[in-house]
Image 1 (tube, rainbow, N blue to C red):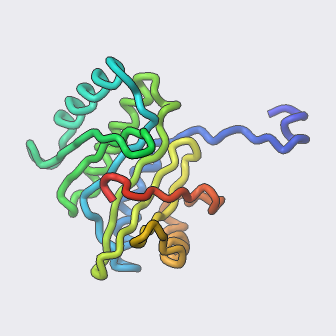
Image 2 (tube, rainbow, N blue to C red):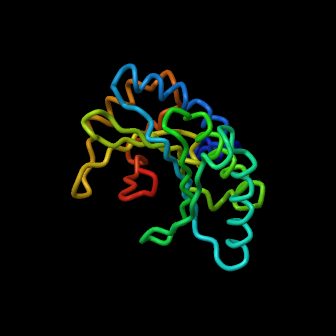
Length: 194
């Protein structure tokens, strides 16, 4: 950074660190012990839509990649592509709920494949879903461009459980880099995998 950047308050953007995703399995243990939230076995990667041949080629590559990196047993992991009402593409991965590490490996592999194929600028976020005994939903959302996580706890009627999100933030502050700017805790209504 130069003198003018400092004077004008500009900062360097944070470089994405996909390896932060590997902190989710230990955060899952903390969430279960402290708050009773257990993994659902579902996770997703969101990226700006790709069209035509690029999307088809990438879809084929990701499906092949996930079949070859399945760490549980043949056929136990599932993956599917979808598009939401806002035009964003999602890849949803599913594993047995007790194998968060395999799910995180798949989410990491998809992010890495998109990045390696030159589509890193299209990556938006990834999430891993949880649920408690009261059937409350919770997602740990990784913001690709910020290199941070935030909790998202949806409620019926496109509302969110803000007190729960703040409690999760406090609970996981030693496990994951939590996004400090609450305005960046974007709602992911009806996100696949949640």
